[in-house]
Image 1 (cartoon, rainbow, N blue to C red):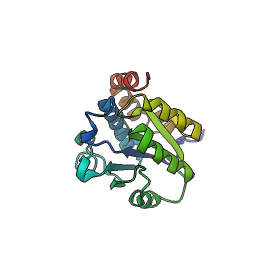
Image 2: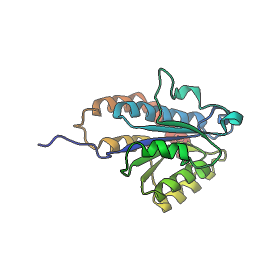
Image 3: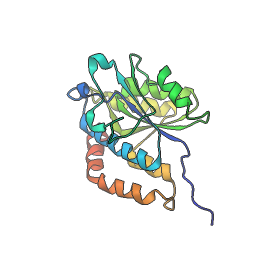
Length: 204
């Protein structure tokens, strides 16, 4: 029997504008951060490249410290860029993304806000021919009513709206791959938080 291969061959993680100053304003912000932490842990296990942005960092501050992006203990990003545009698909991110190769990729997006920066990033990536996933338990907005409107639009545009756990298992595709046990342990470790995140972000 042939050795199992992953279902998604070139997954890539985009983290959109998860900055500390947004914490008081965004609906269920800690749950978005929690899902992002799970994805970051998985990115280390599955060698998934990570891209992150901030929106007007000088005014709105740094990425949340608990994500530990580019810290000695955390995940090194391919790009951790500041922007004024709403979409993450800015020249600095695009150059680093294209340095990974010319193949089309499966891009999963978490962050804020669902109806602005997440939506515009997803539409730009679709236009470039990439497959785009948005995690319903990993995005939010200041006004919670905006979230289902944004997700409905993204589905209509061709984005796959799914959950973090579904995405991780789709990345693997087969329990026989070498990383399965480690991802399975990660899923169990986050099981309580995942339930809370789904209840807080996906019941609208």
